[in-house]
Image 1 (spheres, helix red, strand yellow):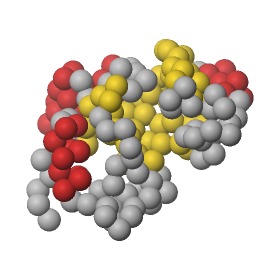
Image 2 (image 1 turned 120 degrees about the horizontal axis):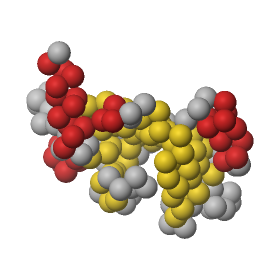
Image 3 (image 1 turned 180 degrees about the vertical axis):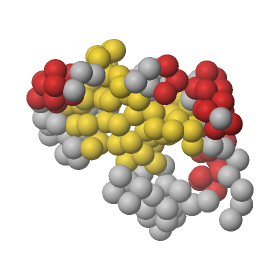
Length: 159
């Protein structure tokens, strides 16, 4: 295999879906103490979400609590309770180019701004004939790490 020209630095987020995000808030915010740091609502993505935080600084993990705007429309953010896992990537365009060349299937939409303001894209949960490598049932978000996160992970790796 060709050497990978990018690094997965760490977990950027997990996204949890349900039909009623107030039930998710009861556990994650009220019981476990996560802080709500923002909200995101998108007709295109069929989502109403609260963006929560676990940890601090460059090692903060985002926990998105999501419900669909319309439970009968796609994407169905509530049908898989663990909706997706987000990974910090040091060089997202290079990662997308290389992974595509290796046969990894990406979900439609390409690289775009995500709910938290970072450039993102998604690996498709299912492979196909053209792209035989996928998430095997798990949607995976690749997130461009900002320079301070890249530097913090580099420093952490050398300790």
